[in-house]
Image 1 (cartoon, rainbow, N blue to C red):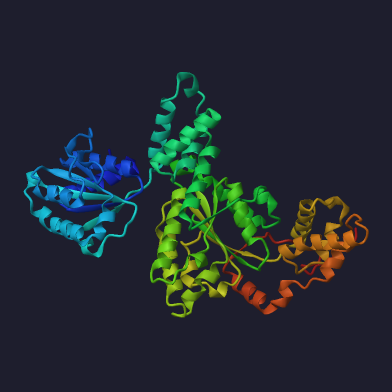
Image 2 (cartoon, helix red, strand yellow):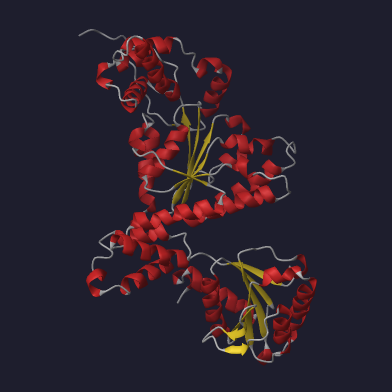
Length: 521
């Protein structure tokens, strides 16, 4: 089997086997999946010619394959390390839960001495120690000996094998209808990012609840993953999708075209998954709403990363929290990762060491991940003040495209007013939306939507009568739009966008605006 066709687990087992052959004394496997990690060690040991042996404080020293006792009385880690030292068989020892015992300096010293002596053993008595733990924190005394391997979660091929095994175990009458046409790929996509045990459990739960493999049921398990890690927020996407966003036709067209890149056909074609989009523009013009709409339109989970909330007073911990959040996003992929108002979290990176370098560390972690990531995580970053963004964040390769979101065009303003009316249970046809649009030339989408509840207060105070166009016009006349209150800042933002970003809205031709005479014919 070639490297290109190997699963992630097979590649990890091959790495472990290579380390065993190279006589590395201490292999540190970072994973929550103890059973799966031990299966990988068994495969690696068979390839390298080692006998796999396990130790834990409950069962002592046992054979991993078959589970036979070797020394059930050796329940103390010092006894286990002494047994490894005195053994003359070519073996690899999986020491379960060992990090908890490494707080004892005696145990740490014994393991360190063992690591120094094992590479010198004869070939037929070669031994190695494997530690399986969720933590990548290796004690400083052992860092010079340990090789840390981050065991990957099951990839698509492995998840497919787990799914096929779950279906094969069903009775004949259920097997034929367990995965209707198109369901298998959708269920695999939904389960990618779960551990092997989580995928098995979720497939089983789906079969019990729905009598078939239901991708929606499988996808719900990912929500539990996010809640468990506590570094990301799970957001419910906009139910109406891109149709719930007024205007922004250029952005919508671009997103619709990129959606197909996540399909199996695109993978077979060799098309890489889109990386993300940066939405810059006037506050209140639909940037955050677009992030929610993308997730709904693409049928993907929407995760929000609040980098400010992940900051810590401890040196290096903020960067570690961000790396953890990004890793969680990769496990849930395909998904949409929303970085809202990114300039607030990244602004300190361009202001020297005013925050002790925390923002610079965060920027470095995000930039490295955006450049190297291989998962299907589509990043939607929004920014109101582009002057605070580091230039390296916006260079080509970090994002697929940068869009500028300006105040709505006349047609978009009318559509936003009608949408807001319907959301508040009002009759949109009873209002002259075009007249309202004409009177709100500098209004943002948020300001336009706010006119409806303001007008409803007026109508309710006047005998709870039906809403009228005059009520909306009166509310508009009492509103000072942000384009006026922050005129200098908005002008600078528009000047920056000229030639640097694509317009999210399609240009709208207004009669007479091109200088030509309009005739009444």
